[in-house]
Length: 144
Image 1 (cartoon, rainbow, N blue to C red):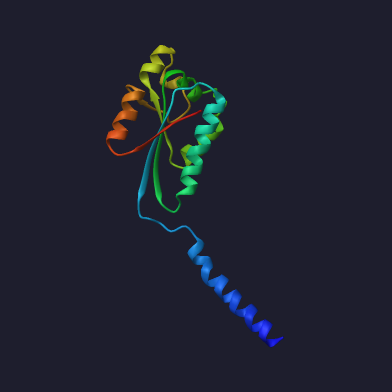
Image 2: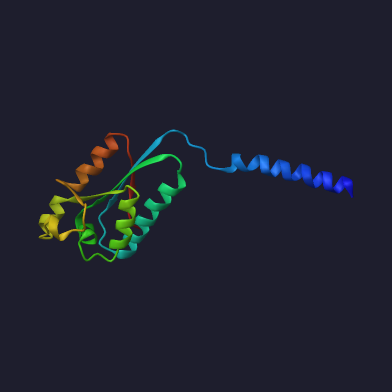
């Protein structure tokens, strides 16, 4: 019986000793990711927003800089009446920035006041994506 107790105690010490090493370790790196979303489909936006959230949570405790650029028909999903407005707000609270293509805004006859709060206008969504890539950001196509 003493042998079993001793073996159990040794096993517990090993498990307890391993637990800290199972936690995510910081690489000290800031992950910079830009998502480009041209789709006006709710399912594509749900997928993109979920991917952004999973990215941020998955690289913790590392820092992230995440931008989601809405252009083309995707501009309609950052309007004030968007079906994904609550998820966008939650991601903004996590530090995600949402960029609104002014070319798409003009094409869809939208003004900044028609969009959700804190949307950042950029002259051209495609240029924003290209410039981020040139600056070393990782590009992910939003949606399917």
